[in-house]
Image (cartoon, rainbow, N blue to C red):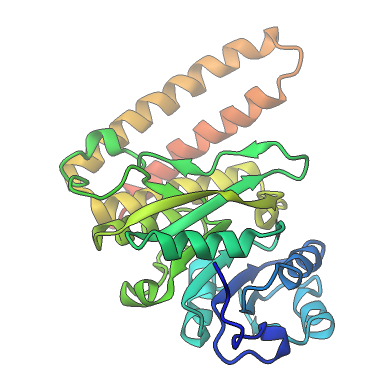
Length: 311
């Protein structure tokens, strides 16, 4: 890709950026600086940067406002969730491509150029994820070839283009006009599940989901939820999955998935305690016990009369 020389970096007053980068923060003061520094030094691709802060109390918004005056900051007075916060920035974005980046991620050299080139050369791809590694360089799995519960939902998901079901939302680039056409992120998802929902709706529009192995991003992972208890995380994840099922699967399919989830979770809650006396370090097993007990409790809440599939 040869960037148009008339397109200046947004830091120098660009009027027509190639890429609009959107970063949603929540208590991210300890990581957002490294993220934005990597964006500032990300090469010659013209870009603009938005940070949407979800009412952080650790000084995130103040730090961005003070240290990064070129960044367009949206400071919310309450935590609106990941999907809604991204959607706040989308109408303001002027780039041909939208790049959604987590605050605990850092772009490596050539990442933006490679991502834009890939999208330009693959018009059938509506959204693509980059390669993601942990800070120590270990590869992070970001691709899923199946949606949750897909083995029970072959009819509901037939006819989709491509082989990738979804990619991790920590580092994704998408066509701006397509994202606007489908209404952006689904705000029924507060946290978790919004990336697979977005990918499915893009495929339903006749596009493929891509993967850019040559564009590398370093990602800590789980930063926004690091202070949350394990049970709280599993409750959010389970609810997000059942929101997805309700939107895309038939009721009889959801019942099959729920029965399977219940049997598995019940069995694990019975068998895990039996193994604990024989383990040197039972912390991992106890965490799994919390996970499966929380899944059972959440399914009871979701399926209680009057509830709507996790909403």
